[in-house]
Amino acid sequence: MEKTLLIIKPDAVERKLIGDIIQRVERKGLEIKALRMEKVSLEKAEKHYEIHKGKDFYNNLIQFIISGPVVLIVIEGKDCIKVIRAMAGSTSPLEAVAGTIRGDFSTDILENIVHTSDSIETSEKEIKNFFKSLS
Image (tube, rainbow, N blue to C red):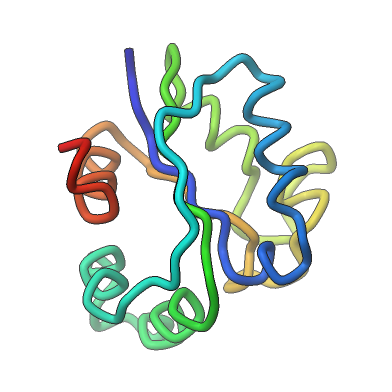
């Protein structure tokens, strides 16, 4: 079975959307394998976003993800990477379709409620970064 990482970002935690987001995952029939709330360290944030290093928005990404607690969730299920990304919707609130997590809750391209892994390789790397015991 495929695994992926879903991060409920600080804006969603602050707005008390954790339950709504987890409920969507569970109702979709996906299995939560690990779940933890933490304040992401600078080191983990830099490792997580290293593919964006040097881009204009990199520092803003880092500052946002470390600005408050997040909920880290490892999800397992058939094609769960594609399923979770479809459920999340476009990163742009202007393009996110109603019914998706971002379409229903996001108002900002940076503070866009959730992070989802984009591939099996990325998922494995991200899970290892946040859940050493699962790697």
